[in-house]
Image (cartoon, rainbow, N blue to C red; front, side, top):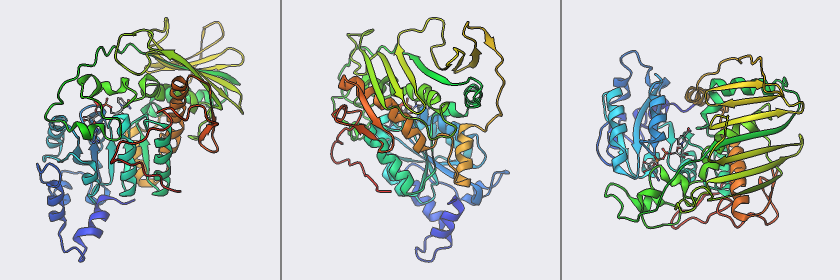
Length: 453
Ligand SMILES: NC(=O)c1ccc[n+]([C@@H]2O[C@H](COP(=O)([O-])OP(=O)(O)OC[C@H]3O[C@@H](n4cnc5c(N)ncnc54)[C@H](O)[C@@H]3O)[C@@H](O)[C@H]2O)c1
C-alpha cells in the first residue's frame, strides 16, 4: 500500500529531483487551498504514542459538516488516521470540522474549495467523498486517477451511467473504495444476513424493503445564494437552477436534479441488505425486470420533484423470486425502515436498524442466533487499504445495489417496465434510456470520463 511515509519519502525527502523538503511540501500543500493553515511534519505527529509516519493513513474530506463530518469523526477515532485537509464549495461548512481537527491534532487542516487541487497533494492516501449524490462520480473518478483510495457515500451515483464510469475507474486504477452503506458492518444486519445465508430459512421466494417518507419540503423560495457558497460549483454537472435554500444543503435529496429521492437515499441501504442476503459474496443478484408506480400523492403541492410514494416490483431469475420496495407515509406495526426475507414455507427474517427477528408463519418468534462480530465499517476500509482486499461495501458491489435503486427510478420516470442485463450491465431495449436516472448529460465544462478496463 502507498502509505504516507512511502509517498513522501519517494516524492520529497529522499528525492533529489525536486530538491524540495517534505516540510516545504507540507507547508505549500497547506497553503494551496484557501491558504489558511500549515501542517506540521509527520515526525512531529508521530509523538504521543501514535503510529509512525509509515503506518499512518492520511485522509481528506470532500463535502463537510453533514455525513462528511460524521465519517471524519469515525476516522479520527482511529489511531492510524490523520486528517490533513478539508474541502467544501461552501466556506461556511468548513470551520466546525476544521475546529474538530485542530482540537484533535493540535493543528488546523488545509482548507480547499476545489477538490481537484486537493487531489494534487501527494501526501493524501484516501479521501472521504460526502458531497450530494450529483457530485460523487467526478471526485471519485479523479481520486482514482490520482492514485487515492476512497470512502465514498451512498448511493454511489446520480444515475446508471455514472455508476458504470465509477466502477470502470476503480477497476482500472486498482483502487480500494468503501461505500458508506455501513449497515453491511453492523450487528443486527450481519446477524440476519448470516442466518439467511446459512440456508436456515430454506428457499427464499420474496424479499421486501421499505422506508417511511414524510419529508415535507414545502415551496421553493428563490433567493440570492449566500456569499460563502460557490453555487455554480455546487451545481456542478447538474442543471443550473435559480438558487433556493430548499434545494441546497441536505434538501437536495428530494430533487431529482441532484438526488435520487427516498429510493436512492434509503432504498440503497434497505434494498442492499435484501440483495446481499441472496448471495454468498458481495457480487449480488440484479433483477431482470423492474416496474415502479408512485407519485407525489401525500404532498401534491410540495415542490419536491422526487415522488413521496413509490412501490416497485423487481423480478429475479436463477433463483426465481421477487423483491418489493415501498416508500410512503406509514408502515403500521413495523419499524419505519426495514428489510424482510420470506421463505417458501412462510417463515420470515425481519431486520431493521435496532434489531432482527425470525418469525414463523403465525408471527411467533423463533430462535435467532447471533453471528460472529465484524470490525466496524470504517476500520474495514482502513484494513483493506493495507491488505488491498475488497472491503464489505466495495464499489463494484455497491454499483450493483445503486443501479437496482436507479432502475426503480428509471421505471417510475419512464412510466413503463424496464429490463436489465447483468452481464452487459445495461438496460435491455429502449425502455428507460431517455430518463435522467439512466443518463444525464453533464453541464459544461464538466465531463464524465469513461475509462476502459
Ligand atoms: N451513509 C449514511 O448513513 C448517510 C447518511 C446521510 C447522508 N449520506 C450521504 O452523504 C452524502 C452527503 O449528504 P449530506 O446529507 O451530508 O449532504 P449535505 O448537503 O448536508 O452536505 C454536503 C456538503 O458537500 C458540499 N459540496 C457540494 N458539492 C461539493 C463539491 N463539488 N466539492 C466539495 N464540497 C461540495 C456542500 O456544500 C455540503 O457542505 C450524500 O451522498 C448522502 O446520500 C449518507
